[in-house]
Length: 127
Image (tube, rainbow, N blue to C red):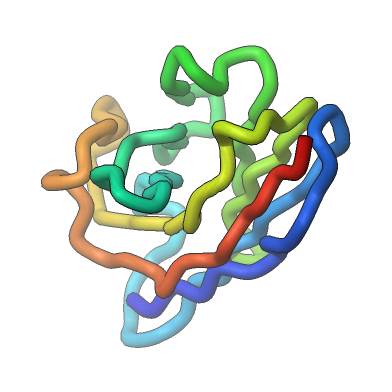
């Protein structure tokens, strides 16, 4: 599975930004993938942001983005999205999408659980 993240850029604090991640590649079933977003700020380790399971009703968020960010998926388009509302300067980071095949009852939330990774897209939030 190849993942291509896009949509990053410069946004003012309190604005909004939507990241997209497109999946492609070898034979797989997109609907069997759980998908996640992680981010890495300069000088910091990569951290979990959000994930969405095979069922779109299964979503998890880090405390730092809960209530401001929303993850969604479109199985027909093989896309996963991250809607960022009211971003803060501390949200500035390179954002990565990730994926792995999972059972329907499990949605990974840790970096080690994900097998496929995109190249990252830079998000810069100005104050």
